[in-house]
Length: 76
Image 1: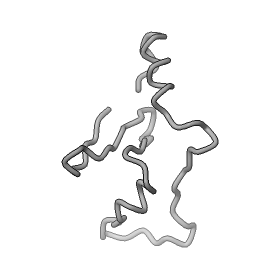
Image 2: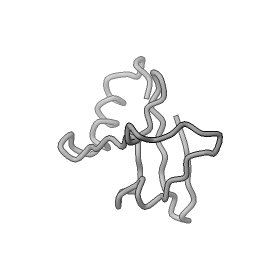
Image 3: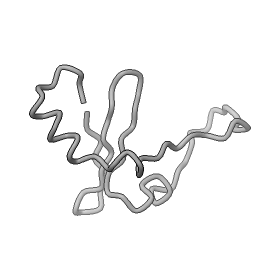
Image 4: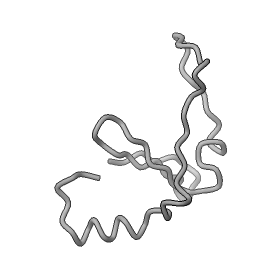
C-alpha cells in the first residue's frame, strides 16, 4: 500500500487488515546461517491459517494471498 492513497481507500484497506492484536511478525532465528541456498518455508507455517499475509520490503508492503484455486498471488 502506498503512502499517497486517498483516505477512503486507506480506511477500506484498514478494514481488511487483521486487528493489531492478531498481527504477527515472522523473523529468522539469530542463529540462521546465510547461505547460497534459498530459504524454504512451508506455506502453512507462513500463512498460519490465514488466506493473506503482508510482506514488508523496504518501504513497500506486498500482499501474498491464496486464491480460490489454491494458487499464490503476490501483489503490491
